[in-house]
Amino acid sequence: QVQLVESGGGLVQAGGSLRLSCAASRNIFSINAMGWYRQAPGKQRELVASITSGGSTNYEDSVKGRFTISRDVAKNTVYLQMNSLQSEDTAVYYCNAVVRSFKEYNYWGQGIQVTVSS
Image (tube, rainbow, N blue to C red; front, side, top):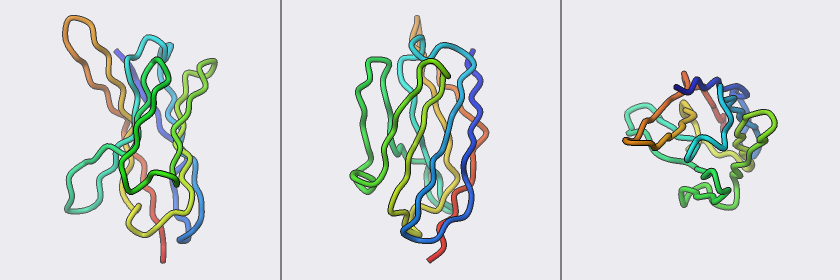
């Protein structure tokens, strides 16, 4: 089991920055991958960025060069630094953790609103 608690969302003007945090209830080295998804009204949930236990990162094309995913192992926390925010980034952002043992388990945070005003 993994509990995930997100923080750091809010309202920001276009061009501004926000940093999201996701605190996990266990050592993040024991989690195969963690990531941030987002879901805008009327759209499907999409992967924004991910980081594996080995430190490899992956980004959705529209956020490359603007968003950075990172982690603090001592705090069991993953971050999403979002710069040059655009109105299209407005969505509910969800933290995700993937644990693979005999099968794959997906865990989700409660979601946090990010609103970018133009």
